[in-house]
Amino acid sequence: MSAAPCFASDNYAGVHPRVMAALAAANCGPAKAYGADELTLAARACFKEVLGAEAEAFFVFLGTAANVLALMAMTRPHHAVLCAASAHINVDECGAPERHLGAKLLAVNTPDGKLTPALLQPFLLHLGNEHHNQPSVVSITQATELGTVYTPDEVRALADFAHHNGLLLHMDGSRLGNAAAALGCSLRALTAAAGVDALSFGGTKNGLMFGEAVVFFRPELARDFPYIRKQGMQLCSKMRFIAAQFLALLEGELWRENAAQANAMARLLAGELSGAFGVAVTQVPQTNAVFAALAPQTLEALQQRFDFYIWDHAASVARFMTSFATTEAEVLAFAQAVRQAALAPG
Image (cartoon, rainbow, N blue to C red):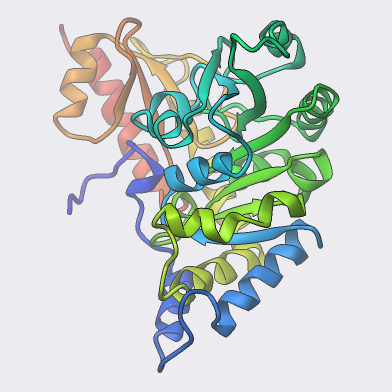
């Protein structure tokens, strides 16, 4: 493991100590397998307390699996899923949704990673036309791949639009906690209360070792999901170890504490870089992502010392991600390194 601070992804962070303690506590004697254990039952009940009585949570290993299997419960092969062109399901899942769903993804160009009813309306022109895949689901990412967030009212507008046109609303919530912390609202306000039908709830990016949850707010979507999950090879035999982590994350709002720390470190980093010679922060961070344009040679020099991704090669824009484990000292040291690299002769 590298000792250098990492700004590539919140996936690079370790496990929160309270989550690690929950894992250790779960590792005490035998327990029923495949989700019949007390911890899994308690975690599913906890999701109901947090997201509403209608919430039915199912645990899986991976974020891609959470998205694909949730959408599988919502579509048939002749359907289409409307999503932002920058959406993770469209860009970063190696075609898994289209391969396993049989349905088509219809990518919508957006200025900020966020869908709106106006942007979606043209994609409904062929509803009822047997020659075209039929839109069935609108999928949004919260927070978006560009670090922007949907307000509860914006989610509700999309839900109303989808339902009015006979569609369902899915939320890829791999960073839902960051969005809720940024907006100062509850998880329920951004999901069930705003009309979301299905949610992929992220844990790995917010302090878990592994594990995600698929949450349905409509009983008809949840009905067959145990079989979909099994066929999708995501039924964990020792499910208590996923459930225990989610209990630690949800109880006492550890999720908010972790997300708030990550968001604060992104704001600090953006502040340290703003106005620096040779550095252009391209947008005010809303969550835990900072986007900055630097000279290609500057980025090349920095990548010899630090891990981060080039977001837009053509525009020479880097993405710097912070996590619950990012410290103020790491941010200040990295910002100083960025400023020095930008000043170095080309």
